[in-house]
Length: 325
Image (cartoon, rainbow, N blue to C red; front, side, top):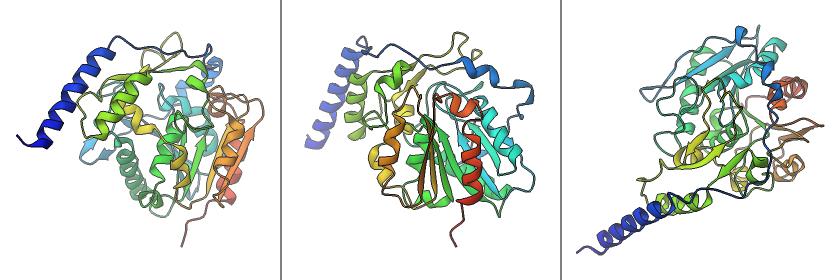
């Protein structure tokens, strides 16, 4: 028998045993607490742009919303955080577009939104980065002379940081990170995201090993659950994520170190429940074109639901983002 086949079979059997053994072992010692959801009523559902489709590698992506600015030569692609969808970004996206600083595109992340193919799941690890690349290509067709900034809030910021790895990260002209989730071990990350998330570390460790050997069989297992509002985001929230979806937004401190040399603004509130805001600046200190803006007393959701972040973002868009010649 081929020794490599024997090892593969042993790993598969071991993975099956581990999966079966851990199926009933979910849970974590998460701290008490959650996000402050009070600001969700700031979202104006009546003025939301209709969702539009774009195509990615021959597959229709869920959908995106477009906020149009007058005479802007910059486009911001802004990715929402875990559990929610593009509606969460309406107050911030509308304010940026109304300022005239940029057009704003807010896609529903795959596995999220009103009509996901499979809620809380993607097809493979890294699919978000492929989706972003396709959206960038669509934006270039619509605005061929525009500067493009990729931004993200929370888990969406993690996707943006992952995308910023060379060489693909050079496809955009700047990065806007709003309290980005930089991985479970990052100094910026609060335990269990302040109690909002329950990560099932036994499963995560097991699946990291299995996927590291190329075994994807169990990557659809749930590895994190989020505490969403009582109405479950009008019934369209995504309270559970599979391993392959979580791994697709899981950045790391090393991801920050390898980001391409592009203008970057990181914004975080000092009252953010998910992050240690004062830990962002040391992480980005080696990037000469990276700025960090701290918002006094602002929570995680207030970063996108209030006007607190608008002026710093608009000023940065006007002054700091220049396409490299």
